[in-house]
Length: 249
Image (cartoon, helix red, strand yellow):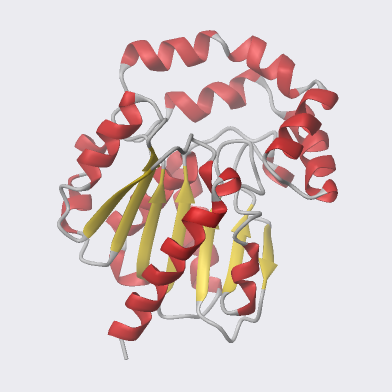
């Protein structure tokens, strides 16, 4: 079973928060939702207590469905950012009946071999930077992590290997190989920042091919907008949640 952090009362509607690669507290600026929702934050491969684990999509999906089953709730919501967004897409495509809604933040779903190779080639250098405690602490501060969250990231980042880092990119979700996505019949929302890469913007367009998925481009935002642009993002999320739950009454 995946280790996970938990915020809020289990008596409230549950939302699964799937963090980005190597960034357990991606949703630090959304934890305030815990006064109204029950938030579950699994430690996905490459972060937290799973920092040394290779990311394998099938195993991760299996573990997440086991976690969802253990909650003994008919349906939950799911939000994923970056790698977590890819995983969220995979989950709702396979078992949409388990979810009230899904939100995909900066989910890259059109991997190109040259781009994958570029990231993999930089893995050794990237990992050296992740092992530099001072640099990781500066990153945490920039992302508006708390002091505790920043210190924890600096500690677990030392366990991330080049192989773990490469697994984030080698296993990038290819939406063209997931035909079930277009049949997922639940409310969905996909968002990316206006300052993100062309690949990310193309991914947003691909996700819109499911008519149940509304897409938004967040103006002036980069890839880290859940942390850096929460003032713009959180009202959008809250409005979406309200619409979903009110429509089910």
